[in-house]
Length: 186
Image (tube, rainbow, N blue to C red; front, side, top):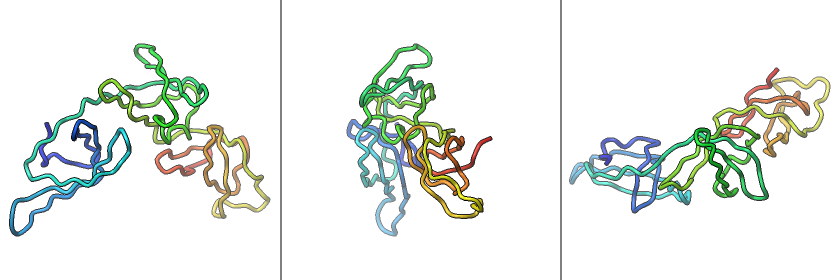
């Protein structure tokens, strides 16, 4: 059980039988009456955001969450096959369950999969991935690093904005949290 005094951004709690993550919280001590905590919670199953107020000192349950490192193997139609790195057990997840992770997947990539009551609920790719540019307009002579940007399609299918000097076949470091170009790799 967690007390409201332990609330922090990113804490996972269980509310009405569903797992939530705390997106925002604020301790409020009004002049009259008891203190309370205003929170913004995101449902890990549906992605819905909920505003909830708790009385100070109120307790909430810890969810039955387990995180496993799994390896992405292949895509079969709209399903994605992942393998547990310890037991070598394979599971199939839908594109909906994978979420935005599908934009940055490459074969044999290690992912963090969050399970709630032995059911996969969320997939996290590493914060930074290395991907090759599959298609982009050619760079023109005189383009500089401080110039504009152009769209580039990566090997995983994601489209990001890159500097004008990037060419097809270049290997890039990409931030998966924001979907932005970080640097060109040698």
